[in-house]
Image (tube, rainbow, N blue to C red; front, top):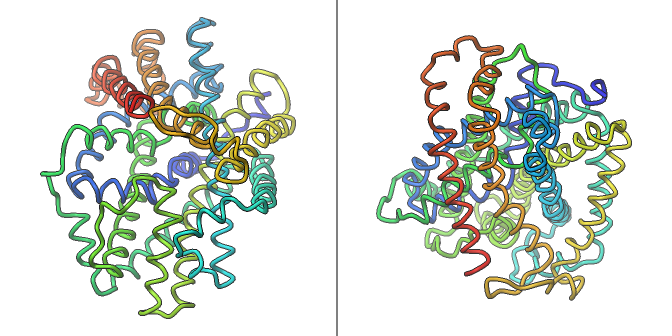
Length: 468
């Protein structure tokens, strides 16, 4: 099955693929909103601190586990713990989590496709109305778009690591970066954009409190695809000749750069076309901002560039978000596929078909969760709020379990695999790691500070979501 698993052709291929998995809705929308609502540059400083001192070591640990074992999360935890059932269960959680995250991510990506189609056919004004989003997500025609998207995704995954995932990343990641920079430069030339830049880059420490610190860590952790088993799996495709620390650093820089430029795009655009914007009106939900608020901003551009010009800019932006969502989705779905290949000893083709069937079974009810089906729309309630099936999947797996899986990785590497085993893997391809400051910091932090912080985030998230 080694041939079925595949391997990235180069360090660049790994960096682009890993960055593609990390760059998603969180970078392009959630980060600018959180920064704007929580002190601007003050939030950015804390975010960068967490990327460097909390997330970076966890990224290195996950990639090392994958490369050392050449296995998926289940196989990696099991092999490194000598088959211990408890740790194998932790690996299963790292498979179940990306599988379920792919469910709601698929639905959001379908909405992006519909919005691109509507704008391209002259519907930007319609999308800017208050009722547009609710009407679109309740359309039975969503299922046709869902089928088309699933066919595209699994066609890419059939191509394997080099022919599918890496090829997609090599095309879409540079394209995404160029589109983002060009769109940002366009927005920065608009009258009033300076107010948005000032709001985004001038720190306001008066807004800082513990909830903001917690939010910065959560955003950093989720943004880098930690806790989803992605980096363990991608590590298993990573050549032993390459430097893990250096490659991980490049992934973190690429991911953070995209988030930073997204802030330079969205905040100046909002203030340029509505100087009286109250940032409290910006939803903390990526979904709310993309589909309800941004079409209004793009429509307001028609005074400067005309309706057609505004529609073109809107299409470019939504295409940008679609590229980010597609690369993330392909990466997320690859995790269970890798598990089926390793643990069930089946071919990639059969693993892809199995995953396609399983994802479809869960994506259909998630698609029906915002108005198509009363049962799935009002599926359950907790924290004093009625929740849809879509909300349940998002809250449990995206918001809650990710930091817990990251916590288990830290504890595992520090106390089960031992930091000496992690060190021996990190030295491969990087002899300079031995005795470096980075080694000393990871030896200290991975078993002390980092797991404590992640456990606190997990407890805080559970208390907020499920107990109001």
